[in-house]
Image (cartoon, rainbow, N blue to C red; front, side, top):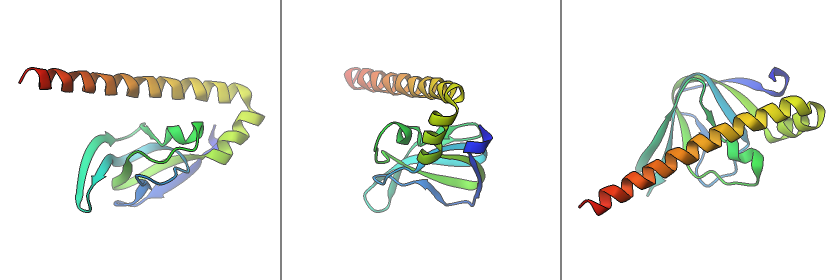
Length: 131
């Protein structure tokens, strides 16, 4: 897998992904910390989740021409492994077994995120109906 990844050191305060812009690929945090958030207006940010060691962001970029639904910015110096869309396509062509394993990993991540979102939605509905 390493031959498809680009290792980068990212300083504090740098965007990995900007809401509403195309996403270049997948980011895997080796160490450091980032946050995913929505930008509401010009000066308000709503934090969605922390992104820490071992976490992945930008995964939908591999499965279509998606614009980022949220911004992701480092909160401190971080080391990431970046898989570009081009390297992803290269992996699919040259290493189908590795590619299949990577797809299974992405499906697990997306399933966890979907379940998490559904739980938040259900919780929000129950809070609204209990008022």
